[in-house]
Length: 244
Length: 244
Image (tube, rainbow over all chains, first blue to last red; front, top):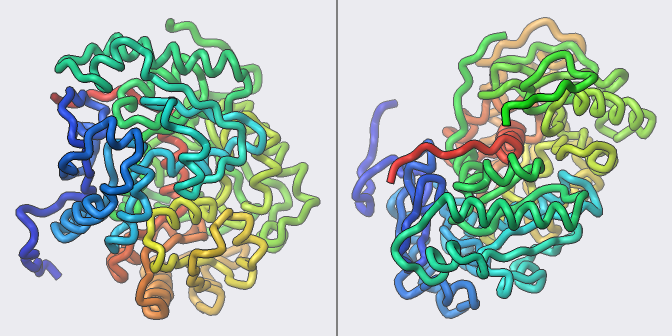
């Protein structure tokens, strides 16, 4: 049935996932949520005007309706699912999900309950976040995520290259340096908690370093891209061409 | 650091995910959890002796030792995570997650809370299972799904061709016929709830038909394969080679 219908709201077609972006200018290297070459499928981006990094990290409920509008706009254009480029957008998960019919996964942190379940009761889960001053169990619980396992939260806010590239962006980013900073933080979690069950990278800028973290620490590493890939997989189930 | 150590109990190397199998003889077609061509990576299978469907459906505690022993054998072979080929292995999820070091994700039903979190408050979540009688409140509670979410459940147990194809032992399966039955149940699911937001396929025999279910209903479809692929990804992170 090769009959296709025009969508009057669409500029173009075939975009799998729509991604809402913080209003921030900094380099997004390959592996970053906001770099299109990170995915094996097409994505489309929309900036949420005025929602700057520190505004989102500090909590800004007044942006909920702007998020809902932006999500609707992406859905009208035809995306099959909606995500974001900041784990702290967890605060808008419900507002965005209520606004559209397509599935919405605004934050890497949504994976936490499933991760906990997979490593068994009692084993600590490490969360590596952009800013541990703003990420607390309270913040998770307000979004309906009630941790059952011990949660170890570590932030990147005091790491010089991470801070100066991302939290107070200077316009360049040395990914070798951020790699070192990220791996060192992850290793310190493992040293303090030898039975660490898994690491969850909250920040959308950290997936480029997930492989290095995994190699160094030797535990499963979940991140923003593992969530978005999962979201996408359900919106376009594959066909199988194997043999028996 | 290209130094590799022998694993004393490994026959071979490079298996990503270990999969516990029901003790049955049935045709596992491409796309089935029990067909190795369903994956983009190597998996390793081990049958759990005595794990017949009726015993797994009720979580027979006499199987506990066999489940743990078989999983430990897979772990000793070097797999980085353990799944199964029956959604009702969820009865052994917490037991096994405590018994091994690698993450355990035995059942597609473990996705219910995550997929539910993608939906709006007024949307319902559909579940298509092999057997609705086995999917009682106790099993749903084991999945961790929030009681607030409206669930719509249908089963394959009254479909003659499905039953004939997946009795034990079974001779052959006509996937066109099974697809017809699965799609009909999915459409009935869709028809019974106008605000259905997504469908989760419980049964490991269903992923071959996920695409057809998606095309017939227009809904996102999560199945055993989307779960296993998420964990494989998190346990085998790779560096990115994209563009800037």
